[in-house]
Amino acid sequence: MGEPATNAGREQTILDAASALFTHYGYDKTTVEDIAQQAGVAKGTIYLHFRSKDDLFSALIAREAHRVAERSFALIDADPEGVTIYTIFRYGWQAMQENPLLRAVYVRDRRVLGDYVRRLASLPQFSQMVSLSGEFIQHFQRLGLIRNDLDPDALLYVLTSFRYGLLVGDAVVPLSRTNVEAVGEVVSRLLASGIGPQGDRAKSEEGLRILREIYAKGLEFMRANGRQVPKDSNPGSETT
Amino acid sequence: MGEPATNAGREQTILDAASALFTHYGYDKTTVEDIAQQAGVAKGTIYLHFRSKDDLFSALIAREAHRVAERSFALIDADPEGVTIYTIFRYGWQAMQENPLLRAVYVRDRRVLGDYVRRLASLPQFSQMVSLSGEFIQHFQRLGLIRNDLDPDALLYVLTSFRYGLLVGDAVVPLSRTNVEAVGEVVSRLLASGIGPQGDRAKSEEGLRILREIYAKGLEFMRANGRQVPKDSNPGSETT
DNA sequence: TTATGACCATTCGGACAATTCTGGTCAACA
DNA sequence: TGTTGACCAGAATTGTCCGAATGGTCATAA
Image 1 (cartoon, rainbow over the protein chains, first blue to last red):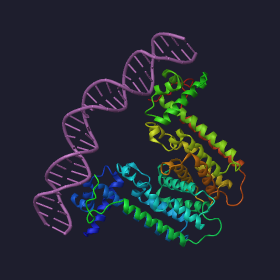
Image 2: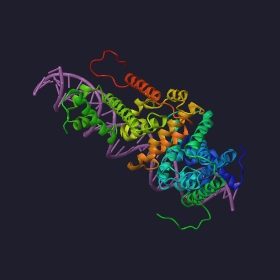
Image 3: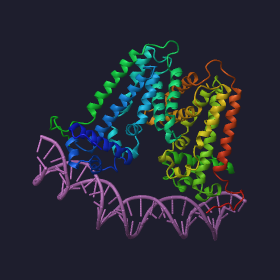
Image 4: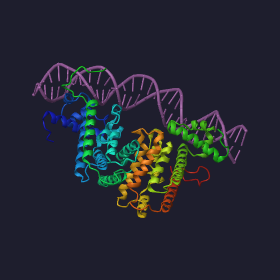
């Protein structure tokens, strides 16, 4: 309904169609023909914008990851607490929870990813970069934004597992749409007093800087290993 | 090596063999013949102790659940902190982490459970009973052993997901044998200041009572829905 | 009484061919 | 210049057959 006919607009339309079909039917069961039909274009058009079905999916993941990151930043900004380890964790989870496709990628849901899971193996823990990494925790500990009497490696493991559990959790305990807020609140409170700084509330501008820095790194990494531009890149880099 | 020839001893020997084979090869790929061979008995003997392969597995799960519970109780007792919400959570996790079979049951690992996962569907969340349930949290909140400014439903969801994440977590971030202790320590510290009572450290004898009570309930539940004794139970209760 | 292992009905799974489907191309077209 | 859809080779699916394997039984033996 009312898709723009511009070049960039058409690409987004294709991605929208692909997103809906992939999350519903999974990568394997969704054919390129299906995507074209849903997007209202011919199959050949898709190959004007993307090199292959794989490349299309990579582009989609990149777009959704970007959206999730922006969404989490917006949520963090909107919270009066500002940038803290627990708002980062809370809204990072919430933003990913709201995005079915990226959530599937993060938890490696074979029902959605299908054969694509093998391709993911080469991107070892790319989604961790969105908001969580070892150096991130160590930075925060050095700044006093996380209590530093905890082993950083163990803490990373705990936080990563925690987030993973929260993302997969509703497979064990069903989580209704209504109490996402309540869960976020509990998570936030728990981490605030659990791993936050004991005494003073330290300045968070530094945290924001680090957050954006690590996000930029993640972007760069994804641009390197992610999708290739189909048209105007130097050709002749085919390996087998 | 050195199995006792007593009746009960033989049953345990069979369960030991089944445990090793199931965890290594999975339910589907392990034949009754394999179990008999590994246990050093004839196949028919197994059917003197267990009604079917399913029943054997149910009995094994029951035994391992019992062991895990006892193990976690022992760990809690050994900790100077005593019975608190965080020692319960910490050692409940650790004990289950150490038991490959029960861990597979809890996370519904299809590679180990095979076709048996369907049977598990009738036991909705039986393993949660081992140490975690809604009423448990509410009891503790009422006693002041858990801060009561948190929504109990959301808290239950968070803790359940947290534990699930910790149990599955090493599929995402590999967890070496050596730092299980470190992770447990972090978990304990995090929960102590995260959800424990803010001020005083309340008396924990009451907590111990509740813990055993809920465990007893779980046992009763499992005895009702779990395996049936093959021999001297009243016959004639076959439903199709 | 208790344990055994040969035996049976059923299921499983590999092999193979027929058939459909799918990602990707490209000459024709607007 | 941008778009289309018929077309193709290879992959996946479906259906079928048949021997091997498996869960479970029971007459026999210790």
